[in-house]
Figure: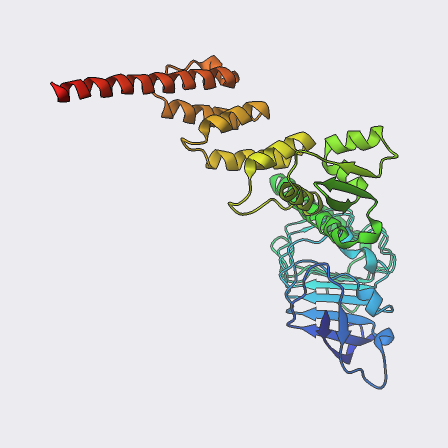
Amino acid sequence: MDVPCTFDDLESLSDEVFYHCLIQDEQIPEDEDFTYSGQHLNDRTNNDVTYVQFNMCTMSKIPKGLTKSFPNMQALSILSANIENISKDDLLEYKNLKRFHFENNHIEFLPGDLFDDFRNLEWISFFGNELKVIEPNLLDGLDNLKYVCLKENQKFDQFYSVYNEHESNATLEEIKDDLNEKFYEADPEFIKSYAKKLQASLKTGLISDIKSLICDENSKDFSISINNHEFKVHKFLLAARSPTLAELLRNNPEVENLNLVDIPVEIFELILKFIYTDELPRGDATDFIQLLSAAYRLKIKTLMDFAAENLTKQLNEDNALNIFKISNKYQQDELREQSYREVKYHYLGIKFKDEWINDPEKVENIIQEYIKMEADIQTIRDKFYNLLDES
């Protein structure tokens, strides 16, 4: 993807001059590689760029790969991009930078390990975010830090500077003490809830990295065959997502391929997509009975629960008994209760017992006898009315 940009010389508040790359009002998709095109000044090149700025661009995460395009960059600025979360993993490739400006976004929380190993960092600005909690060890190890701006935030509204000419000058230790005090004043429930949000965000990032492996044919080291269809896959990922396959591979480490039977190709394609992307099947065309069967066999609980939930939504008079039997076979308690209730509703003439919920064969036999009895009664009733008509 080619992203247009402009280049100029920029003088900072600290009187430093940077050769500056500006990307403005662009859509920046997550985890894509970019090339940046624009007219350089005075025959300079990307190697001369020391400051990269995104202004009012649409993005959900910190862009990756900037140091490949601009190997000598010293500063990164992301302004008004609606970013909500930021973690150490987002910044790993930028650990040699001197400046970060993440201004006018929606960041609420700064984890303490965000700048671990950022020994060159001198300037941090989170102006105009929604900061509520900053973990107290955020600035540990940043011995070269000169400026921290936290103005225009929910909980924080000041900047600190070790420059004597700035009004709010403070030592690094004084800055840390102030952050610590505000951290311990924060709402503990907010800290807990945000930890969960951050964990979910990190999971999303991990899933995104795993998604990219789908197209990486060179690293695939295992194959699965189903009805003459071969699927190239990553052995480690199969073991991580399916306890059944993990045990098989652990007991047979030399195996390089596996032939699966009794799983339809189209169902396995859905399962494989889930294994790589964590995406659940969509659409009413999915055979959720087949999906439940395959997920049960592979012990993929998320897919089992998903299939059972959708089968519950599909319950009706025609399929209730079959789904009731399946729910027992695949040990889906909630689906079993719902389908048993549906079965009882459609056969009100039978006095069902609670203990039959664990005996689908008995329930099926009783229903078959009931249907046969109803048919016999109807036959007798028809003969009786025929006799009345003839008399």
